[in-house]
Image (cartoon, rainbow, N blue to C red; front, top):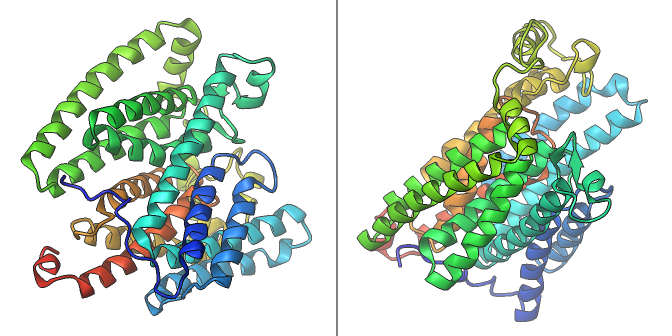
Length: 419
């Protein structure tokens, strides 16, 4: 096989008992699964993550020196947010926004610490949990869109778009990208029986993603899938595996196009698809449209070192920034505005550096990096600053950076030379 499956576990820390290691891995599955249910507060994801933090810290978790840059960047970004929100702290929604930002930063560090050890096993359990959660969320979205159960349409749709167990169809669709990439990997690399099951799962996820009618997610699924498959093709050591990737990819494109054509024959789906696929949306055009706000907001950012504070953009414009990098300037002034993109693009640059490192979890790494990179791109046209799965992926990336360095340091010379 060209790729060592993530189930080929790296050893757990020597001082961790087998039962404790099993509990830690199970918690990673729970975190992945619970990420699919976020339309209630506090969400199961918050509860599962908090439980994981308590258990992991109490059973042994190390903060490595290599995480210091990440820690500093996250700290400075949130200091900027806090300073610029100081005059707004009498508003509950502002306090909640600030606390959420600090919480997201903590989860990044936590997941980086977790994945730095027992990397392959913990990633594998997280992957399984994410796929299970995506199946549940996708099924809810499809059931709700077609109103297959009484009351499901009102519960699992918003603006006649599938939202599943999410508050927003855009976030719902974006969450499905990483599980879809994991399943796609199984389709093109695993044996026939497992690949067939994965094909059915991928079809369900793709259908739910389509019915969410998120243009950004549509584009992200296509681009991240293509990017990941290219990386898998390049990094594969087997010509047979390369041929299989090409053949299955071509077959998937043809079958997907036929199914999409059939689905669009339904008038309700086809009409909304044409509307959402159009690039002349009213909220995109004009002086105060999405792109007009980028220009005007950028001018404001240059003139206001302390920004305007979190959630204040709509007091000046009809809608939110819909650009995470601009929002960093607006919410946290020049401090957050400079350090937020520095954090994002530092992670991206490091991500490219480790693409070709031969590690047992390389297959999972390629999927996570592709999905992370896609979200980074989507951040230019939508606010992703509080997307839980975005910060989860960032933490995983940094944890895998550390694990890869340790793997190279202990690998045989011929393995290390493949960097």
